[in-house]
Figure (cartoon, rainbow, N blue to C red):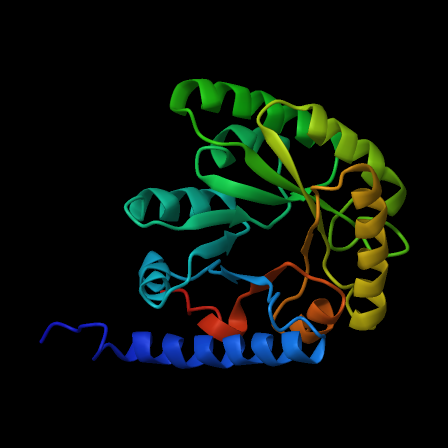
Length: 244
């Protein structure tokens, strides 16, 4: 018997998990005084099959995150008929820029001048070839004391220079900032710091209002401090599938 969305147990599981996360987001937004301003949900599907993306798209999800180019490019190609947006959320090697701009709507991990340069060159070629729209770029900021040593990101002091570089690059659109709360740190304190960095960025680049912050374990803290994009994986998809 062929499974349908109504009878497929995996779809039912994903629907239940997605509803639970959406309820958490809605409740956190109300608690933060943002009932009409809930952040965008990006479901991070790394290590999970393309069929799960297809199922979630059928449940109304339109934004998906990946952190490895090979896996992301394969899923994007397999699901090219779906009307979804792909967000690259992992640390990105400059040499992968040419591949990423073929499918990514946004890169959330722009953290160094060399990467801005290679993404700009890749976008110039890709726009000439395909006519695609600009690539949204979030500057990843390290909230660690030793910037970038653990979870990636530029030092807060380098954000302004990177922002100017992104703004000057044809084909790139400065979207805002992104960060991961340091392991073991207080998430509220970390995201308050990110909110201050975002405010300083907006003083010079008013349109760069995006704040990509918050994962399964700390989305409420991120929403309290102005997150516009949440990157949620395990609370929706469950644990990483076993390797067969």
